[in-house]
Image (cartoon, rainbow, N blue to C red; front, side, top):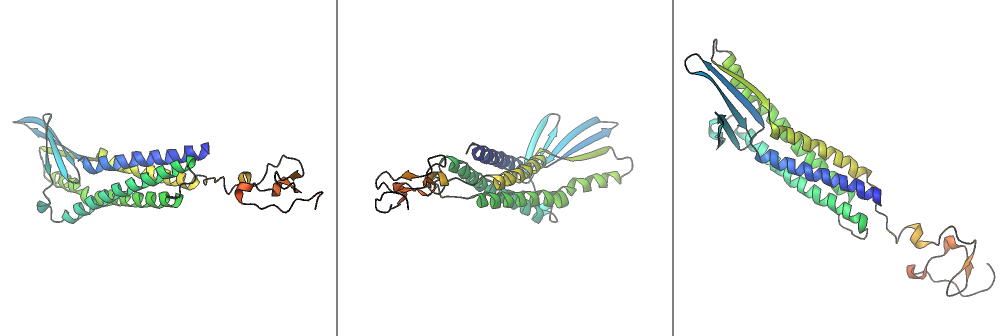
Length: 248
């Protein structure tokens, strides 16, 4: 029981952390970070940081940051991809929430085996779908939206003696989404490895007498003697045969 509680508890904890990471990565505009360096002989050196998210982008210049909604109307080629990433990320959060609930139910069933709600299969299926939607968001962003900053960087590299230099890297939100996917994988494996719930009404210890007893024992009411391995307790509904003497 302790082993099952530990395994199911770790799986639930990983799913909780993964869902929190999915929420943060969906909300925080830091999927890709663009650093802009301007080396103008007249105005001097200036550096700005632009963080791109799913809903907003933020620009920081001289330690002053300002965020605005992404103008999708100005990005017609990537408008549908932004909407797809937003939808997938929200679905991943919802699936992660239900996966957490199902994993917590599995952990509670260790102490209350009579609880009939949920199953290991539910945790595994929800973890798989959470993983797939989160991974689809990562792939779609990397292949169609993350290239937005790469296009700008390539364009500026084609301009000779351009005073502007760009460098782009994936941000914290992208990394948190990856970690959430890894947590979902580990939680899924732990859910599969979680031992089954032991029910005292169906276990051999609750139905039969202890194996270390005498070879034959008499029923407390009828006096009928038979091996304790086959002796069911009265509360399980066993009706002993009529009282007799000797052995059959």
